[in-house]
Length: 421
Image 1 (cartoon, rainbow, N blue to C red):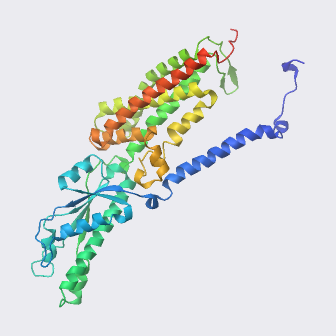
Image 2 (image 1 turned 90 degrees about the horizontal axis):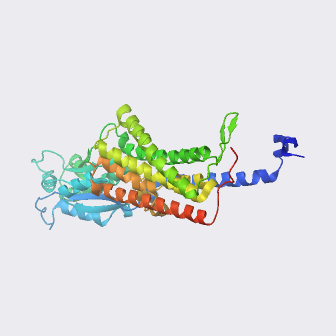
Image 3 (image 1 turned 90 degrees about the vertical axis):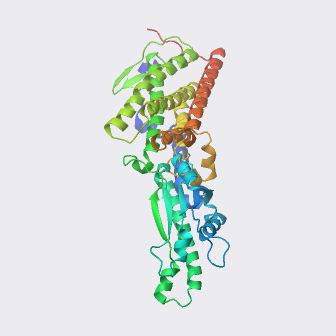
């Protein structure tokens, strides 16, 4: 009996075959489990995971020490804060105001706590008739580091400022033994905590999230573009079926080595990525009005970033064949999103994700995008490191992809037997 004479199978008959269920069930179950653990594990409890968040600590107070004390109040407060770094949650960096502003502008700190000049004098004057205003401590935020990171830093600095206020209040209350109950109530918590934006970003910056979503677009452009190109080339060369709706075709197989096929796919990736990246920028900047400066640099960086991802996808597909798309999805997206540090600071995720962040592509790319969009394209804001990692990633993709295809070709592993025209 020829294959065409065999009776047609039915879904009712096939669905009762256990072996047909086994592999899809195991794979989809594992994927669901891994995705849940990876994504939720990175964001479920950032406050508990928070460690060593970089925050500037500035003492501008130049007043004389109060009677009976060796240091002014600004020095005492900053020393107490740096000695008790919020249970390890903060990495307090004692800086001058100029240094703190520079680190805010380069994205090296998530915020700052500033004790202003004249702080001691204004505190000492409180119980007297010479008091004109409440002493202040300023909390500076850095929304360019992302809304969650800036919020965490603001919480830590605000809590530290209020603790300092209560400490100062205890000293004032003890010294004002004959003061009225109303005066003592005022002196118990005498410092006004003022929150200001330390490094402002544009109103169309998504509260510091446009850098993450723009990076995600670049990764998806490279990932999806690479897979579309790979499948399109395989179909055009006769190594895959072309099925659209009820129509099914199979082109004659073109004799070609794996290495030459990979070279063709990579060349097409380099050309087509020009179009996709240009359209991404057109949609985000021109149509949607996303705040962005250094547009030529942003375009060049975006192209190189998406191209590096696309070349990586082609290399992985060439090496792993049919499961290559799944492997590249894990490399560029599944493991990349929770370890990018673009939404949840790396200081607030478990150690596993901090380990991944050293080499996962999305973290490397997001640092560069953030530097261009929010920090005046400064190299020390992460742009220099991002360029280096793009070059490293591109070289690794080329070396890995062509090493694998050359090995397969030399071993005689042809993809398919040529089909007649």
